[in-house]
Each structure stands twice: as structure tokens, then as C-alpha cells.
Image (cartoon, rainbow, N blue to C red):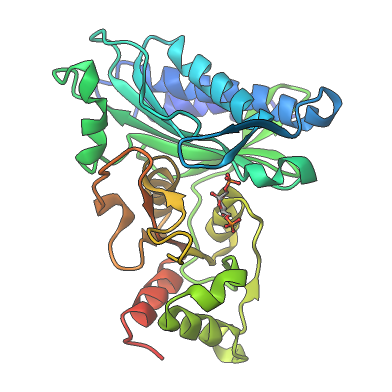
Length: 334
Ligand code: AFP
């Protein structure tokens, strides 16, 4: 192992130097995120050995049956951030309300997180992830207005995901490009493995739960027909890849190009994915890497959050593929 390898913590400190006047608080939060990710990587890896697979028998705020790992992941991430004293509140898929942590002046941040994305994959060893967005709060706003930050269409000051797959990857941005780190389990360190990630402008794969195609807008069906027609000159047909975990499908699009979409349907009239802790953090990251993210019509980061568990349609990935989806949806393409 070369000592020239860049650890996550060193990268965070180098990024901090790019923020004149930074006090190191955001860095401290990102270091804690890395720590929580290591714990989750270990526990997810041995969940079947320690009775941590399966359901807890409860439902979360958005009606999903909670898995034991959902609860463990939520407690691990919340605890890791709470102990810094820098977080005023946490918005989580597993918490009905904003969890107020501290009202002190130094608690300048709000964490929005999906602690375990793709939890329907837990018992089948499929891809899993953790999504996070860190927002700065206006400390003049009292603690009971934490949600206000989200209504201001704030863009996260840092965002990213952890992907628990064949290896454990942490991909993040704090405003200066997107970088990816692979967990070296022996060393217990996240090491820089993907420097300055740029999302290819076009891909060759699409990710969507096409079992629902009959419920989608006819223009979306035309978009899929277009993608699946054979035309080597335009790189078609695209292949279908759907992991059941947004993080897994967005990661593929970020690295190889491609598009993920989850349109509205009768059982999800607003879309399925949650704006504040799934879509907005990933939109901030993908845009930073040159990609695009919208609800099919409006940029995700321009959508004000009316409530913390608000759902929106999502299309995200390569800039040309997402733009084409939007053009089809408007009926400009056929
Ligand atoms: P869970 O985290 O509740 O498993 O949901 C996963 C998810 O939010 C996203 O990660 C997937 O892409 C999508 O939902 C899968 O939804 P369908 O099962 O309806 O395709």
C-alpha cells in the first residue's frame, strides 16, 4: 500500500482550505459521516450472522415497513452527527418529524439523510446505500423553524452517498467537484479511488421499474421505445439496469453515464422518492459532476420542500439523456 494514498480525512481537510474562513465544522461532520459509514459497512456485511436481517414490524413516516438495518443505520448516523454538537436537527426517512438535537449557536447545520437506501435489498444481499445532504441553518431562526431551511430551496453545502456493494464506496461533494473513496477494510480507511468524477454526457443504460410502464405517461413510454430501438450510430439500444437501490443506479450513471427515472404512477401520484433526503442531495452531487436532475419538468434543486417527507418524480443522470427525457415528456420528441 503506497503511503501516497489520499485518505478521506486528508481530502476533507484539503477541501476545507478551498473555503476561505472555514472553521472546520463542516469537515468535522464529513469525518463523522465517514466514521458512521465504516460502522454500517461492517454491520451490513455481517447482518446475517448477528440476526440483523428482516423486519422490525413497524412502518416509517412514509409507510415503508422498517427493516432492522433501517433502524440500526438511522441510529448510527444520527448518533455520529449528534455527538459533534454542530447539528441542530436531523431529517431522516426513518423519523416522522425533524429530530431536534441542539439549539446552541454552534449547531449551525441540519442533516438530511436516507440512512439505508434500498432496504428492500437487505435480505437478498443486494446493493444498499446511505444518502446525505448537509444544510447550513440560519441560527437566528429558532430551533422550531428547522424545516424553514428546506422551504428556502437551500442547496446542501455538502452532499453524497455511501454505497455498500462489492466494495464500500463513499462519494461526496462539498462544493469543489465530486470525489469517490473506497474503504480499505484492513486499513479501516476510505482511500481516494475516483478523483474529480465527471458524469458522461450520455450513457448506454437506463434504470426504471418498467413493471410500472403501463401506468406511466405515454410520452415516457415513447422515450423508452426510443431508447430501446436499435441504432448503433446513436448508441442505441440502451440496456436496462435496475438495482432496487437509487444509490446503486445513480452511481452507475455517474461513472458510466446513463439515466434513472421514477415517474408518478397511480400508487405514487407525486412520485415515490423523497425530495429532501433522497433527491436533493443526489441532485446536488450529480449536477456538481456535470449531470442533471429534475422532476421531468423542473430542476430538483429549484423545488421548495413543503414538508420533510415530500415525494417528487425524479429523473437523474447524464445531461443529454435527462434533457431528452424532458423533451419527450413535453411532447417535443417522438
Ligand atoms: P427503499 O429504501 O424503501 O427500499 O426504497 C428504495 C427506493 O427509494 C429507491 O432506492 C429505489 O430506486 C426505489 O425506491 C425502488 O422502488 P420500487 O421497488 O417501487 O421500484
